[in-house]
Image 1 (cartoon, rainbow, N blue to C red):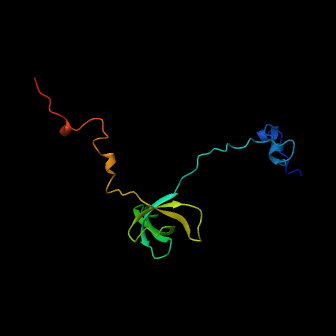
Image 2 (cartoon, helix red, strand yellow):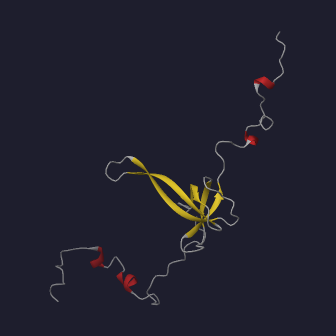
Image 3 (cartoon, rainbow, N blue to C red):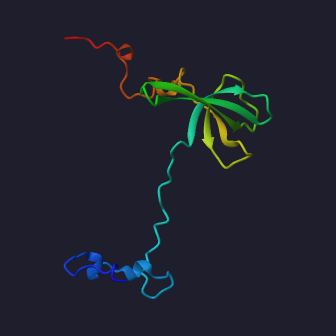
Length: 152
């Protein structure tokens, strides 16, 4: 018992009683326990790695496609960025995807042991929508569309 007692010249916030250890060590239903207000129910949802993009490599199963996702990761020793490939099973409810299609994988509830993604058609990057670049939507006409003005 004499080993646990400290000399009186040592000062600490825990020893002087500034920190209320009784609230930390008390039972939750104790009257001395500090009740914390509930955390706000509206918190932003974390959207990390919920969607991925990959290429369909197998579509023989019914309502299921195998998608290969390629990502770049640094090599553990040489720190060069190398390609890492991983195959995921994705749900394709309408059997609309064929081998070679580019799809987005969206995280959903587990459908089976290996299927936790839904395959969604990816927007085509080679052909942007023509409505974005139409001259009718722009308020300023191109030089070729302007009428020549007489010079004085």
